[in-house]
Image (cartoon, rainbow, N blue to C red; front, side, top):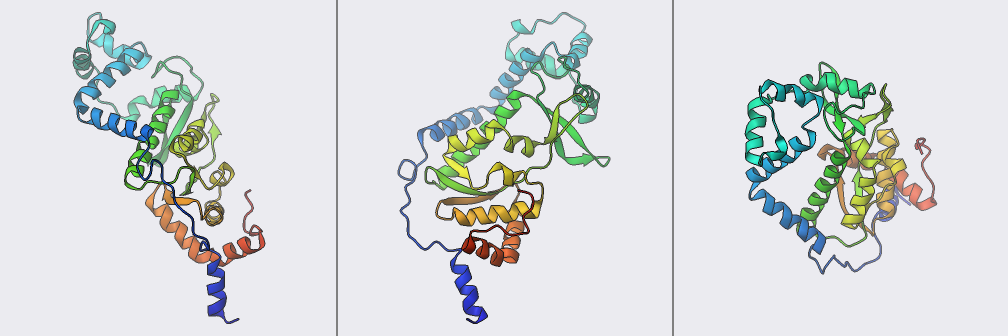
Length: 290
């Protein structure tokens, strides 16, 4: 067989050979849960200013007694009873007494938390993890505290995004997502808190599993691939599993656009190895992290 026909034969392995009928959720429309999420979001977006005031009021009332805020309340020079204040009055007090702040202002408090201080320094809710910022200041990444509420908010953000996507591109219930996603190593701080990137925490969390169940779409790759630690090897496995589940894949996504570009560059480089693994039910010797 000449090279041309050999390549065509190998590429045929990557193309589905059977025709399947696609059944979309609710006959091509978003389901009731997703519809409720979109209606809620559009309702609150129409009155964003008032909603933000209510959110600030809730945050301040919950965290009124934390150490960071106490000094600013004292600077007001009078006794403050936030429970008796309405949202607008509390917003006015907060913006007049508490100054705008940068991460540098919070850093001493965050370092205390990282070192094991469990007192309500910045939040009334306990800090459960520390996330590393994607950017750097003076050549180093910054810690960002995460509470249980932070994790739930992340879940709601992804659920909302999935609802809008489904409104434009409905998918089959139970379909697969070819996600080029990666997590880095987590580590413990001096005080025993787990630290790592925000995406690393998310992919290892219960919320990531719940997101898949809520949206009725499941990632092709298990956590062992996502957390492999070697970018090229994880990408190879993402591609291999995407091809294995090709009949079920509804869409391709990545946390960042360049991730998809790099994945397809890897596909161009390794497609023969992928064909060989599919043909012989093997795993390339280049994969050492699993």
